[in-house]
Length: 612
Image (tube, rainbow, N blue to C red; front, side, top):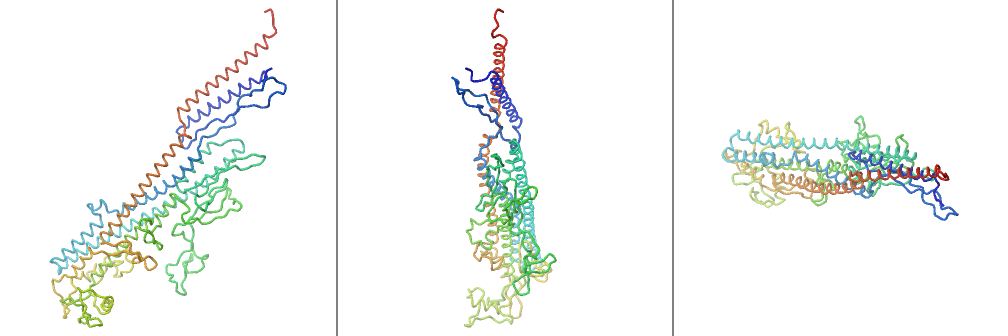
C-alpha cells in the first residue's frame, strides 16, 4: 500500500526544486556581496516536511512529503562579536590617546630639534654662553648686557610659542571631542531607527538581514567610542508571536541603557553655572554670573557653560517620534563610566597628572593629558623667572662679603654676629637679612613686557621686564657696594652667581605654581635643562607605553576579526561547493519529476490495454 498519494510525489519533487533554487539564489547573493563591507554570509533554513502521522490501517509508515524552506538566516558567532567589540573600545582609546600625544610631541619633544639639542635647550645654552662672555672681561660693557637680553628674549619667545601651540592642540582636540560626541549620537539614533525598521519587517515575515548587517556595522563603530554590552531578547507582539529586540548598555557598573529596542538616548556635555572669576568668598561677592554679566548665588539663574571637565549627561530614552519610554529618565554619567575613544579624548583634555588637586598618586600611575604638559612647561618658566629675578637682586655686601643695610652698615643678628655672604645662615638670621638687607637691581623677567609684575608667570606670558627691555635697568654684575656707594668697576661676583643657577638643582612642587590648594610634595628636582629633559622623557615614555598597548590591542582585535570573518564572511571555495551541491540537487529533483511523470503516463495510458 502506497504511503504517498500519486500526485503527492510531484509536490515532494516541486518542494525539492524550490529549496534548491532558493539555495542557488542565496549562494549567488553571497558571491555578489563578497566585497560588501559588513555583509554577513546567508544560508537557507529548511526542514523536512511531514504533515501528518502514519495511516491507522497502513502496513507501512508514512514517509515525509519533501522539504520546506522556513527562511534565510545569517552565520554569526555572538561570542566573537562580544570579544571583538571589547577589543575595539581598547583600540579606540589607545588610538585617540596616541594621536593627541603625537601632536604634543610635535611641539615640545626636544629630540631632533635645534641641531639635536632641542630648541629651548639650544637657547638656554646660548643664554649661558652670552652670560659667560659677559662674565669674563666685559662686565662693565653695556653691549654685552644687550646680547644677554636678546638671548633671554628669544628664550621667552620659545616658551610663548610652545604654550600657544599646546593651547592650539587642546582647541583642536576639543573640536574633535565634540564632533565625536555628535557622531556617537548619530550612531545611537541610527541604531534605534534600524531597530524599529527590523521589528516592523519581522512582524510582516521578513528577516531584514541587510538591515541587520547595517546595524551590526554601526554597533562595531560605536564600540570604538565606548565599551558596550549588546543584548538580544525576544519581544512578544501578541498571538504567541515574538520578534527580536536589541538593547545596548554601557559595560560598567551603572549599566546605563543607551538603546532599548525602538528607544534611544543622546549624550551631551554637562551644563554647569558660569563661575564668577572675581569671587573670593567674601561677603557681598557672587559665585556665579548671569547672562548679562551680573552676579548671582542662585545656580538656576546663572548662565550655563559646558562642564570644564567634559562630564557627560544622557537623556531619557525616546523613539524617533519623540515619545519617551515609560519609566525612563536622563542622568549624569559617572566618572569612568565610558571606556574608549571618548574617554581617552576627555582624559587628554582634562588630566593634569601631578598637578591635579587630588594627585597624591605614584608618578608612574597618574594620567597626563595636555593640561599636564602645559603646566609642566609653566612650572619650568615660572621657576626660571623666579630664580633669575632673585639672582639679579642680591643683598648688598661690602668688599669683605658682609651684608650691608641701606645706610651702609653691616647687619648683625641678636647675638651681635655680623651676617656674611659665604656663611650658612640660620632661619632667624635669614629673617633679619630679609628685614634689614638692601636689595640691588631689578627683575629681569615679568608676566608682560609692559611692566615689571612677576606674579603668575607662565610659559604663555613670560617676558623680558619693561625695565630691562627699555634699558632702565641692567643685569646686576656685583653685590659689592662700598661705603661711598661705589662698586669695583670690574666686579662680577653676581654674574658668577647668576651663572651658577644654571647648574643648581631646584625642587618643583605643584603648589609653587598653582597655590596652596595643590600638593606641596616635590615631583621633580634638578636643573633647568634636566627639568626640560624630564618633560620630554615623560612624554616619550607615555608615547612608548601607549604605542605598545595599541599594537597589542590592535593585534588581538585583528585576530578576533579574522576568526569572526571565517564564520560570517563569504568564502568563494565554500560558495562554489554550494553552487555544485544545489545545482545537482535541483537536477535530481527535476529528474524525480520526470520519472514520476513517466510512471504516471504508464499508469494512465498503458495500464489495462491489451492486444496492441
